[in-house]
Each structure stands twice: as structure tokens, then as C-alpha cells.
Length: 279
Image 1 (tube, one colour):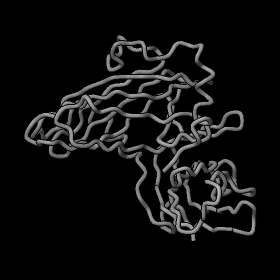
Image 2: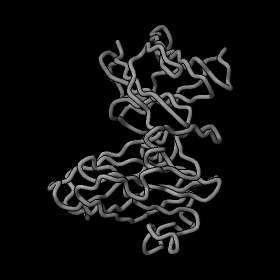
Image 3: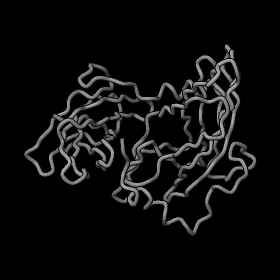
Image 4: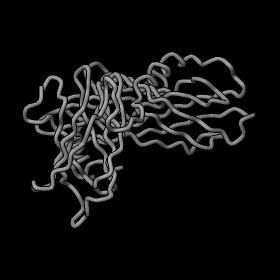
């Protein structure tokens, strides 16, 4: 799945070169040494055999950071786990984001604070895992500041109780979108998707069910730079039940048929993910 082109992604951050970055603190896992705008820490959740931890990004009031696919502008977090010990694999789980619109650009963001649950597997489950992270991300208010952070935590083997961050991780897990088939009969669901090839470009109409205000996000194949779905013309703008997506931003000559899109329908507190293969 891809994000916007590199030049578009960085546009919001390049204007900030004259501002001090947030990377100056020796350890952003220590709030006493952190920049006032952003701090990260790793939370020890359930240890082996489940292998669950969390990454908390704490932002100043009114600040935000980006989802895995930032949208029209912004940069997603990138993770460096190379200094970890006894670590086989980390899978980052992404809570449902919110939509942020500014000056014609739309982004998928987290406001003020977010915990990203981390699924951990150990090389040797009988030994502790030292989880060490180097994080590159962005902290934004009206403009974005490139940020760096470092944090570590040790997960002990055989633990049967959760760590100090277990409650925060459990709450974040409730917000991670769940896989769901298109057409599911649920309060929050993508009901149907219709392709119209008579328009130029072709476009999709996505009908949804949402009990409260929601936003729809889309991710396509590599090098597909799709716009963010917008509420349909006659939809209730406060809680749209229908969205439209022009199929533009594709590589030149790329066929539509057979390519898969991933849609995430989010209320900011919960979400569902549905896969759609273009006919």
C-alpha cells in the first residue's frame, strides 16, 4: 500500500527548516528530557508468550501526528528496531485515525496522543526481549516539525500479568480497525462499492453505514497516489453515508482491473477495514 508522492508528502515539512527540530533531546523516552511538543515511550504490556507492547506518542495540546498512510500531505512514522535484542519480528497495529483538512489538503492523523499496539515475537521465547526503537515521525500544529525519538523497554519471559502500560494498550487495541467483508450488516460497515467507468477518470461510489461522524481512507498498490474519498454530493456532510473516489493518481497506463484497494472506515474511536478488488 502506498502514500502520496514524496514531494507532496514532504511539502508540509520542508517549510519548517528554519524551525528547531524536536530531535535534540538525548532520550525522548524520558519526559524530563523531551521537547515540549512531543515525547515517545515504549509501554510494557503482556510479555511472552503473547508478546504485546505499545508505542505511546504524547503530543502537546492541539498537535497531531500521522497515520501509516498520511494522505495528501505529511509523513508517516518510520521504525528502526535494529538495536533490539532477542527480537524476531514486530508488527505495528494502527488505531483508527481521524481526518484533518487544511488549505485543500486532507490527511489521516492522530490528535494529542496515540498508543500504537506492537505484536512482538522473540527469537528465544525463554529469554527476555529488549525492545529498542529509533522513531522518525512528524509533530504538527498548523505546520509540521520533523521529529526523532528513542525508547526501549524489556519484556520478561513467562510473565502472566500485564506491564504498567497494559491498560493503555488494551484501550488502543479497541480502536484498531477490524477486518470486515464488504456488505456486512453491522452498525459500522462498508455496504457496497460501485465502479463507474463512464466518467473520466473512472470513479468509485462507496456506500457505508456509520452510527456517528466517520471518515473513509483508501490505500492502493505501490505508486498509486489516490486522493482521499470525499462525501458524495447529496450526502450528509456531518455523517456521510456515501463517498466518492475518482481513480486518479495512477501510474501512466496502469490498468484498473484486478488491482486491490484497502478501505478503512473510521469514527476515530473504532474502525473497519475492507478489501475491494477492481473488476
